Amino acid sequence: MPEADKTVEKQRGRPFQKGQSGNPSGRPKGARNATTLALEVLLDGQATALTQKAIDLALGGDMTALRLCLDRILPPRKDRPVTFTLPEIKSAQDAAAVVSAVLAAVASGELTPSDAAEIGKLIDSYVKAFETAELSERLERLERMTSQ
Image (tube, rainbow, N blue to C red; front, side, top):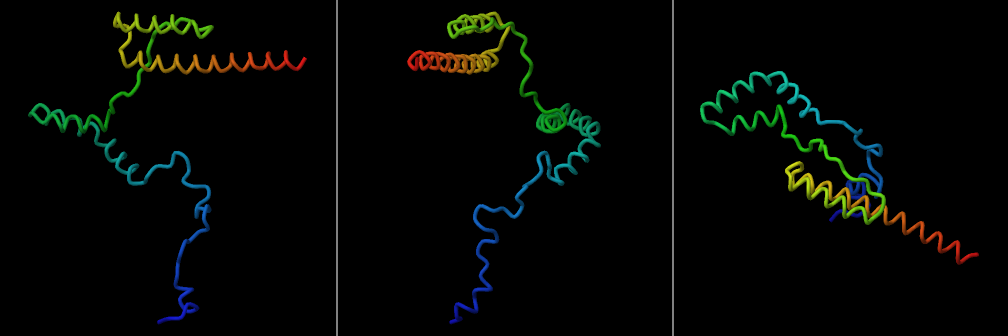
């Protein structure tokens, strides 16, 4: 059985102290994997040929090939700008009128239900921020009145 003194040098343990990285600055923001970049260059160079082949395959009945290639070249759109006149919110009570306007826009087809849900989240965030600011102001006034 080896002695503890002789095995100490062979034991690796943690290469860095706890909480200390080997690369403190980390990977630079926006840095991308070299393999991904190389594949994108190859794909971009062949986009026209791939699109034509995918169309040919799709016309032959292979819809999966078309979907896969086009998703790489032109990814599906995640968000789109929404043009909708939103009534001004000057108080928390105005939020009810704004929500009513959003519902009317959904009913008339001016907004999709998912767009209305996102707008509703924005309205909710705005109202919460407004109420918080209003409560803070009221608390400061009360504190000033009690300290006088």
